[in-house]
Image 1 (cartoon, helix red, strand yellow):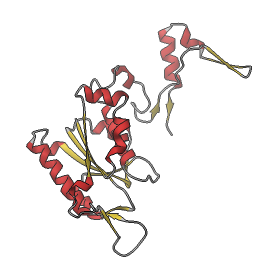
Image 2 (cartoon, rainbow, N blue to C red):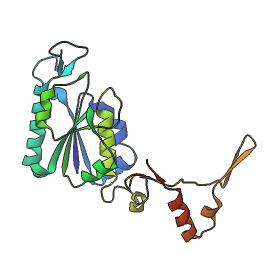
Image 3 (cartoon, one colour):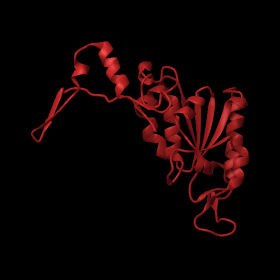
Image 4 (tube, rainbow, N blue to C red):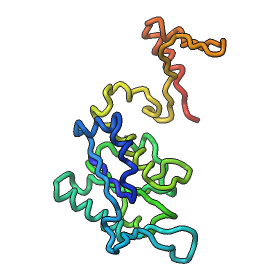
Length: 227
């Protein structure tokens, strides 16, 4: 799978995508992440990507022309390089107005070959961009400075579901949200007894006895269902 990110701050992603699981997934050619600077599709010397809103109002609005050109060029490259059929490509706009992204959404996207992510900034994006996207997505009921954090969250949530991305596929089975509406059981590791300020905190004894049936029963009991 290839992720294509359209942003005006391409350097934001450097650290996150070059560490841990996502770094390894790229190295093993399990995923590809391509980052595009929206300013490369502007025509003026100042590389302008925003303008004042019609009708007045606070802030600036991202212009539709460079975004449309970027989408068109990226889709063209996907087709010309035979990376995937166009119908197996989705364009997602990160927006506070969008549908809330969750584990079910991540699972629904794992069969795609290409995902184009548009990171909004400023006060918003010219509404006409919605004629050229497939989905408008939010990662929470709050407002962020831009869509870059949302893009990272979406890429992470999808990538870890792909074959061989996680070192141990068993990690996916009982983790939170692997079953809709269910949170994973509590986890413990050494030391068995943690003491601080003369107060001790123990790991549950059932986890230390090696009885796999009882451990499984305890884990099942401790899973929490979301209301």
